[in-house]
Length: 517
Image (cartoon, helix red, strand yellow):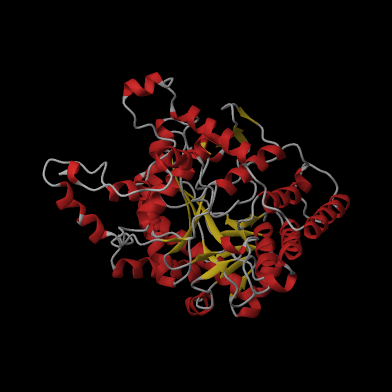
């Protein structure tokens, strides 16, 4: 019986354990080794049908490359080029994508935060690109550089986030033409995790690479991935000059790019899940193949942005069954070609952090984990179809990622014998709460969310009836007050600031992207 169970001496006592629990753990979790069996929704013959359909698109419909350099590159590689349209022989495509590394390691400013990618190794990355935010007071407004820094600080402190991304929100208090410099510096300064680099123009991408060379060393980044670029295709079947130029800047420096068709199912793809995946696959393969034309062996990531379109309004939707199905299918195709792949995570179309936002995000997160994605982007903050980043949602999404991380580790059998030994100790009708094994393991045996309230309604009311948005914002304020900036080497910091100063003089301040300076 429980009363007969000997109680072992424990260091610290209840007060010490309570104090330990009150200190937030901000240590980054290692890159995730996802042990969840992947959802193989297609048969082998269906995978082959999608592959054959995609190769037929590449060979007979072709892909438009609106870029003279890329067209010349393809001609030298042996592709058939007519005007801006490139017709890719399937044997050529297969030979090129075969040279993409199946896995690689991202190197962070803090080597302890290096993360592996590929196979069943994956990372969670915050959202980017929001033109608005919902701030610490839950007010929707235009963001600033200080707001961007706030999100980079929070990304640094959230254990399940493995990257600080880049422009989580758009800093409107800086000229568009020079904005990429300050965004990149913010990613580097306020976090020592891996990060993303702006690909909004070829010149901007070149600036990112040069800043990475300052931070890590030119020789180092030539052989070590440190930053991620994203290049979106214009579905259907178009890659433009801006994206291709930025892609080349990253490829030449041996840095990985997400080759991401921008899919709005039913609008820029056929109104069919399978046909949409066939088109998306062709678009992604054409870009993946081109990375290897630029630099054979450079890392590259099969990317996509997936949404379906409401036939009522034309607006993009999140959390729909078809998005989950397409994620499962894209995962299978990426594994078929043996390349790492990217997806989008906790997407929401809700205008506030409400039940719709939660359901949409949870549905997507579950599908993403079972699809076996590697680069899990937009993992925190996304709402209103990406129009705003919510601080409250950022916090809860990051905790959801931590819960998914725990689930994806699979069951732990290491303590099975010790735990089974408690059963005869307690016996029928007893309870385990006071058993020494429970006392030793209660903090790690089961995930205990910080932002969800599981108290009784009476206790919840006594504590002020605080709902999740307010709890999340309170936690964000607390974490920001405790934030400790990871020290950036003084000489590198000075060199980065000098580079920014020089480039801001060279690039005229303007409300348009820098394309020529």
